[in-house]
Length: 208
Picture 1 (cartoon, helix red, strand yellow):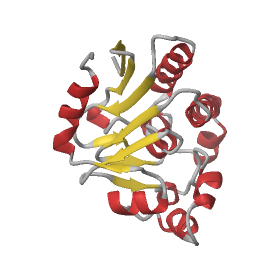
Picture 2 (cartoon, rainbow, N blue to C red; picture 1 turned 60 degrees about the vertical axis):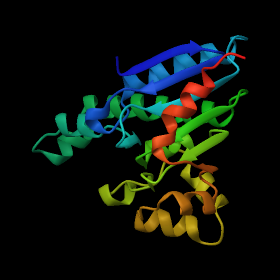
Picture 3 (spheres, rainbow, N blue to C red; picture 1 turned 180 degrees about the horizontal axis):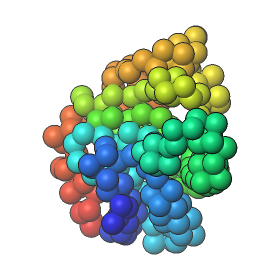
């Protein structure tokens, strides 16, 4: 399963399970995450949600752009106008942006464990969460400019909330920042060592 979801001790545990691609998200992942969150928001047995990625290398490396390359044609114009490309892009981005908005406006707390790479779509999943945890392995960035795209997933809103010209700088340079800077600019809230995460999970599962 590319996403695993379960309820334990009043917590909705939601894991992106694609470590081979640094938990990059595609349409299937987005739909599964959305379905779980929508269901749990109405479930009185779920007190809060914990969102994290499988493995130690990445929370989420962003949208899986591989599909666009798989649809690529030698004829650039034909490729850009291809119904397959347009349909996939419209489907993926529209569902992804709706998921980001759902997280941002969620009525229950969402804890996002931002260990490892948190880039692009991964930022979109985490920035709207109510409790955002980073570690010594966190690498946060909006790297869209590197592929000729623009900072999306709500970046025109949240980058403008950052102090000074930091948002503009991160958008234009695709600069990768670490945990302390993510907390300073307000895109993360708490710092732990990645080795402590398993202990925290166990404590959250203890029933008093």
